[in-house]
Image 1: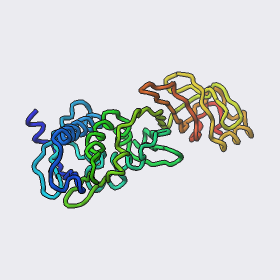
Image 2: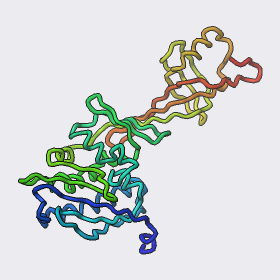
Image 3: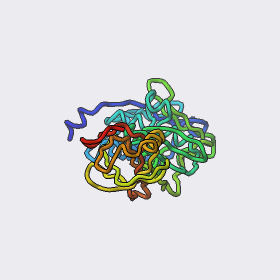
Image 4: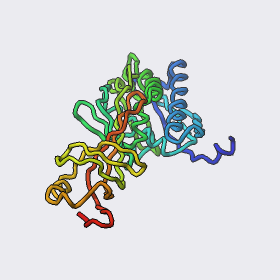
Amino acid sequence: MTQQLENLPVTEIEIAYGGEAYADNQIDAKTLGEALTSLSTLIEHAEKIINGETAEPKVNIKATKEGSFTLLVAVMGSIKTINALGLVAGGAAASGGVLGIIEWLKGRKISTIVIDEQKDTAQIEVDGEKVECSNDIQKLITSPIIRKELDKLIYKPLQTDKPSTFSVSQHDSKVVKVTQVEATSFKVAKSTFVEKTHVTTREANVHFANVRFKQGKSWDIILPGGEEVSASMKDEAFLERVEHNQTAFCKDDLFVVELTETTKETNGELSKPRYSITKVIRHRAAADRKLL
């Protein structure tokens, strides 16, 4: 295990509690203890969410600076994880990472999340506003544990009588700064429950078992594995060609289509997939038939 940790990349960041409340470089021992524990748990849990249970990050507190309560933190683990959290300059931090998107949410409940499995991205919607992020970031944002640790790392230490701030810096560059007023966004949510939609689009060879000559109507199709399912036909151009030449295909013909599979995830439970055909790419007619 020691050898594994030695081989991990090391990322150094500065986490500071500033403002008038921390100007004398002092912090309540209990608050500091919870903040340090939460930082370690935050990174460890995020690392395992992104890279699997075998991931073993390590967080070391190296020193403190005068003028504010500043922690010099060395993180041994995946830069991908630190980047997704929004704790380093550049990369996801530019678009916010977890910290930036939670600030954008401002405590609002997420309406929907649509996950594009091919692009490995997610679109988060709240109050009609949308933001796109990586699939890793949406996993972290909707994790109750991640949100609980951010509450202890950011929200609680800023509940001071005098003005206070939380900030993260790297290489003397400010990555993120949260004021006492903005800290409310990081207060642990009563529920991170949200319905997620997983969308997968791929090319597939299918047979048409039943056709209906209207866009959007469900067609019965046979998937490559032999399963018969209903699929909404959304290729208007193909429908037009079929209507003008219905004798051009039969049940035995094979079609190469752009097939979209949509699955709803509610509280970890996946619904039965829904299918739609967005484009008919190629018609492989039976040997004795002419191509459409």
